[in-house]
Image 1: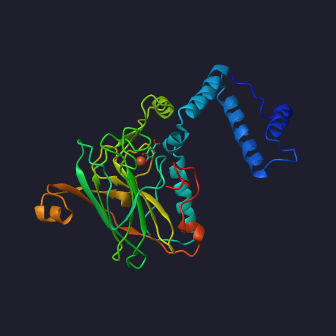
Image 2: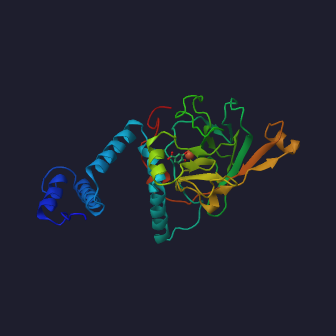
Image 3: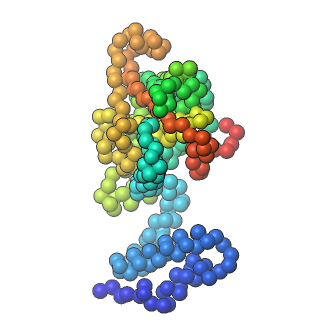
Length: 313
Ligand code: DHB
Ligand code: FE
């Protein structure tokens, strides 16, 4: 039987002191949130009769998470990124904002400053011999289906082993990361490879916790996008490839019906030639509709820590 101490004046006073509620300095919002957070943790200890051994194993889990840098990897696995999307969707619905391509999570593996080009880019460095060639193309339009020229389409994805350049030091700089400006018809085209699904590092902190939850740490093959243009809302989204074992079983909860895209195999040499290819390839079509906005803060991705962001790349 678990002892009840949360209600006592001693514990309530302790929580207030912990959160600095009676101090003049500091930040009021941080105080309120830390007060609630520590209250809820104390409450969990009480309700589940958490033993000192369990408590300290949790502390050292957090320490390990910091050491291997996996906090931003764990967050999506615990549904945090998707939950923030649910809240932004609800905000939009309440404001009567409808239409446009749906958002979904950014994930932790973006790198700022990828090479930029007009209309077309080759994204792969040609070294991934296990991979299949892909052409990804689509049009960026406004809510009236009019093309948006010079929209910036920032694409990043994993290689055939599920690894991302920069985080996987075996890949060349900015491999599978490009920024493409749409042409006058709103079109972007990328020559790249079909990515493989991603899996959390098997020995890492994220997978350790997922194992205790009886969960896998797999994502379907997917391709990330930031799409932006002056006068339009910035869009963070991704496409998840149809037919992957994990398309509808994504540990990061990013899959949305409108964002599942099929890779069509094209054997027609004439169509291959159109893209400068001389063999069969996979074609993925992803059109994007942006919503207009006057608000300049909505035209940019939200601020957060990102690799190489703010550096002159
Ligand atoms: C994670 C990895 C991804 O590639 C992604 O898109 C989302 C989340 C992760 O490791 O948590
Ligand atoms: Fe990803």
